[in-house]
Image 1 (cartoon, helix red, strand yellow):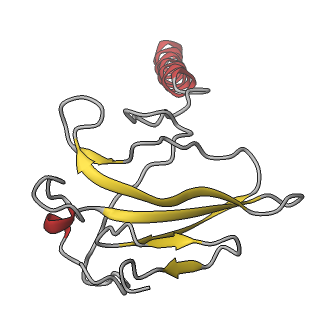
Image 2: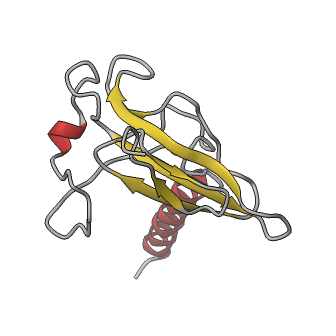
Length: 153
């Protein structure tokens, strides 16, 4: 075989290696960013009821939960959240916060609530949710749910 053939073969291989190196190095160091309409540290909610969902809720119809509050005052769901830091006593982060479906930010509906809370930088948060929403249950000082029967006391 002649020398030009080997040079061409080597140059072609070097060209492919160079192209591969450029393609692979062009993606290095790029982080994948989460595309969300809200801040990354904002606490957000979603509702899911499917075949395999474990629930003890009295309402499992997501369409009912998404109703307008003018049509169904108890649409949506209630959420309790208890923040536990390793050095301090537990704190109430959400106390029966009413989460409901509406246009919160922009022109597309989403689950939201009135008093925005953010994820703490340390510790842990325990969540407890129920549906449909009701104003009756509250957490007492021991972080136990009280179901007061208003009008029957």
